Length: 360
Image (cartoon, rainbow, N blue to C red; front, side, top):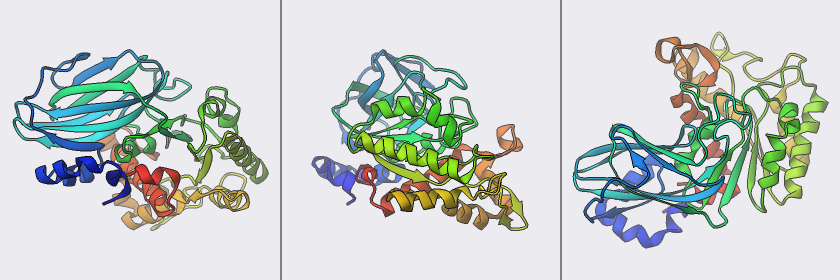
């Protein structure tokens, strides 16, 4: 049994008897257990049938949310919160069966990108239950007590994209994070290491909330197209130093590749050798070594993935006109964001980073 599940072992017997543990582990959900009680009336604050939308007028902060999925009829339910953050992948329930899941959710305003790109969303907490036949019996929301908060500092490939089909990997890793930990995504489209560091809505706002032992994942490169090696290193080092001064744990993440091929191999541009000849991932790895900071080499991992699929099949990871209405070889489809986010999660587990104990 992995660490996240063992921390909530009191549910284990109930899960095993009902066969729910396997489902929850595969789906990447919160703590789950079978509930044989008769499904209750639709939760207060919720309306509609497909989707079911719920709104709670809470202040920005972190909240423990418990939902009971299922009802009198068979259901297939997905749970999304705030700016298209997926918490519960499509989950089936039999008629009369109810399964309860728990999450810790970060609420911000604006709820998507900190600079408001794509829209600011609604104040408070918004939850949407989608799927072919969503079934929800109960929702509970209460302030979280000192959760671990994992902060994301990055660009459009990381951020909470409010408008589909664009999807950042930070929106998809939330399915794997168990209760007691929350993802606070401060990624913002178009940001370089320097612009993110200087903008008061971005790094300074993130830094003001960091508490002891909170991990801060730092990914930049896509928009450092003309940044010199010395400036890039200085920007990263400044973020590391300031996070450490707050007692946080900085983690560097090299940028995911673009889909630009020369034959069956990605080009230097795809691998983030920028316009002034700086190999940005190499510089980030060097800063990590010098500062003794963990580095998630997403560039190398994503290169392996994209090149293994080849020029044609790798298109599904990005945006395609035939499917998404736009062709874009930098930004991810929902499927691609899930795959790239999975590479980040893989590294968190492999390196046993602070968030690892909360991952399913």
